[in-house]
Amino acid sequence: MGLSNGVNIPEWLKKTGEDFCPSCAIGGGKGFIEKNIEAIASFIKDVLEPDGFADKNGLLQQIDPRARLLGVLLFMVAATLLKNALSIVLLLSLVVFIALASRVNIMVLLKRVLPALIFTLILILPTVFNFVTPGTSVVTIYKGETFYLYISKQGLEGMAVFLLRVLAMVSLLTLFLLTTGYPNVFRALQSFPIPKIFVIALSMTFRYVMVLIKIAEDSHFAKKARTIKPVTLKQSRDWLASRIWLIMERSMERAEDVYLAMTARGFDGDVKTMTVFEMKGIDYAWMGVSIFIFLLSAQL
Amino acid sequence: MHIPDGYLSPKTCGVLYAAMAPIWYLAARKVQKILQAKQIPLLALGAAFTFVIMMLNIPIPGGSTGHMVGGVVVASVLGPWAAVISLSLALTIQALLFGDGGITTLGANCFNLAFIMPFTGYYTYLVLSAGDASQKRRWIALFVAGYIAMNMAALTTAIQLGIQPYIAHLPDGRPLYFPYQLSVTIPAMGMSHILFFGFIEAIGTAMVVSYILKINKAILYKPETNPLRPLWIGLGILIIFTPVGLLAHGSPWGEWASEELITLIGYVPEGIQRLKGLWTSIMPDYNLPGFDTPRQSAFGYIISAAIGSGLIILIIYLAGKMWKR
Image (cartoon, rainbow over all chains, first blue to last red):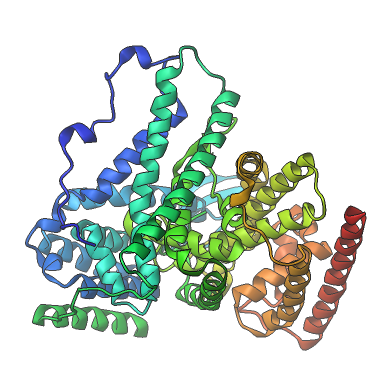
């Protein structure tokens, strides 16, 4: 991947086009397609420009991306192995320490982790009540003749362990993503025991996602520019199906073109990379710490 | 449907990665044979396609939204084996770069969405549209294929989540990972997918693929053999794996097969009706991890599973005969 680490997106590209053309807002609010496109745009922005932390001179950024990824994975496995709240809190404080040492803003990290955390919280909230986890009552909500509802100590503990584990694991992955630009993610993957051909396909996938989103966006705005009266939900869905087909066909065409281009440049199925693996002292130290934490949690 | 990190026990994650390893290997070999050197850009594009499809939220009645996975669409264009790789690539990108779905649970997510989904969908379509199918029957076949594929993926997801309290808990029985049992996960996932997400995938698949059939039939994947043959192989494998599922402690493949067959033999409706009561009493007999299984019940189970699958083969065989006429 020839791109440098910091991809700068011009300001105008980041705007999602509010107040762009007020008369375009047919039928009041935005349709689901427009909302989708906005969501996708912010998605891309998140990945291409991970708040600039990847360029900072912090702890994780100094570690080779390969060692960085392996270490983070080991920490994640350690988090799944831990069984009590205290040990996960300890691991979590280590994650916070690494984040601070890598000059990652904790609030930014938290903001990224929050959706997964809230989803998990809502999902497992019923487990604190006695109808899922009976045990010692902490808070009695209702006590009648036949019906007894309370929050149990065991339920609260179980929820804490589950939430803390999800928090630790999601923060670790987010920390890796925030400190590693996407070309380095793929570079890191190449030294893992995965066939190189898959890593190449993976990085191509990532590029094509951008291309296909552009096609999706273009066709949406093309339609929007030509629409003068509100469309029904069914028309909207029909249009979406035809555009999905369009994306599909464009994908196939492009695959053909790319294959021809690759063949023309001498690709014979064998993948060669120019990156040389070189471990420095700090990489060994990082690996040592992560292996130690992993082994420790495996014994707990 | 993407299982996040921390929901599954390390054992389950390991087993599902191990289950995916031979599938990925086989898929890579099959793809090499069928698509040759063109494979990389094609697979990458297929992956990018599903990735984009998964981002398009479609409104469903009631104000909520859902999205397609596109597993059956990709399988019908690239073939089921190439779809395994394409969907796996898309899921990896989602997990690795967007934090959508876990890294430790990637094996599980690939098993559900990149293996179960394209295969059940593709072969359902193939069987239902066997012979000289009319346009209307193809549409229905695609609809049913999308619906079944989505629901099968939801079922395996529900099973993976639901077995967590049985296989990983503290000495006092409290779950360490996903806290809800099968009696909760299967109805919960079932309801949302039978009522909503299944239909999204069904309508989406039917619309997109029938559009392709109408516009450019040539890009669709052409099966090299009799469309019904894979079905026999699949059922054969299922039967062979059923006893293995009883022996292997906590093997999701076995669990899936046994769940499947329990469903087919007809225990599930009762179980769902009485939720906890019956389920917890049935489960120990069906060799869920953490319980000792008497050899006799295992035998009875194998026999009933064999009878059940035999019946299904018979029904499908007769249906196939009728369609061919």
